[in-house]
Length: 408
Image (cartoon, rainbow, N blue to C red; front, side, top):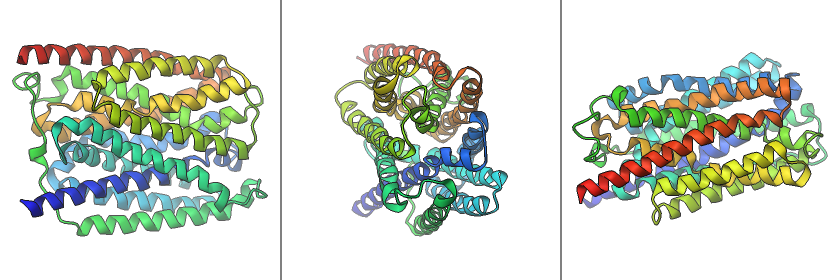
C-alpha cells in the first residue's frame, strides 16, 4: 500500500511538472504571434489561423477519451509529450523556409499533443488524491502552467537583446528557443514512458445526483453538455485575450506601447493569471466553486467593459487585470461538469476538452471582427459568453444545493 501511494504521488508530481513545462512552452510559442504576423505579412484574421491550427485538433477529444480507456492515462501523457515536442521542432524549418503552412502544421501537432495532455491529465489530477480536493488540484495544476507563463515572457528580455527589434534579427533566437523546448519535451516523453503505471479508475466516484440517471451516456447528460458549451465559449474568449494582448497594447488607438513594453506587460498579465489560479485553488477549499466562479465572471465583465471602452492606462489596466479572473474559468467549469461521471470520466473528459475547439473558432471570428470594426470593438464577443457562463454557474450552484439537501 505504501509503495502504491508513492507511485500515485510520483505520477501526480509528473503531471504537475508537465503542466508547468508545457505552459511555459506554449507561452514562448504564443508570445511571438505579433512577430509571425509581421514576418508572414498577415492580417488579424490570418494571424489567428495559428490558434485555429493549434486548437482544431480538439474535435478529436472524444476519440482520444476512448483511446485513454484503451492505452491508459499515463501512456496517453507520453504520446502527448512526443507530439508536443515534434510540433515545436517543426516551427524551426517553417521559419527558415518562410513557410506559414509549415508553421501551421507545427501548431497543429502541438494542438494534438495538448489535446492528449488535457484529456489524460485533467482526470489524473482529479483522481490522484481525495475527491473533495479535485477542483483544488485541477486549479493548482493549471496554475503551475500559468506560473510558467510568467517566466516565459520575462526571460525573453534575457534571451533576445533589447537592441534586436526587427523580426529577422529575432529569428535565430526564436529558432534556438524552439529547438531547446522541443528536445526537452521529447525527453519528458521518454521519462513518462519509463515511469510505473497505476490504475486511477478507483479515484473516480459517482455521486447520487448523477447515478441512475444519465451517468451511463455522456450524450444525454444535459449538465455535461451545457458544461461543454460554456467551456467552448469561455476558452474561445480567453484565447482571443491571450492572442491579441500585445496587438491591443501596441495599437496606437488604444495604448500605443512599444513591442518591448508590451512584452513586459505580458509578464504582468501572466503573473496575475497565475495568481488567480493559485488563489482559486486555495479559495475553492473554503468557498463552493460555483460561488467563486460567479464572482470571477462578474469581475471579468467589468474588466471587459474597460477593454472595449477604455483608452491609455485604463485600457492597459483592464486587459491586464482580466487575466486574474478568467484564470479559474476552465478548471472550475471542468470540475463542475465532470463531477460524478464515474467510469465514464475518460469519455466525459474528452467531451469537455473538446471545448478547446472554441480556441480555434472564436479567435478567428474575433480576428475577422477586428479587421472589420477595429480590434478594440471586437472584444464585445466576450460579453455574451460570460453571461451564459454565469447562468451555468448559477444552475450548478442550485443543483449542488438541491443534491446536498436531498442527501441530508
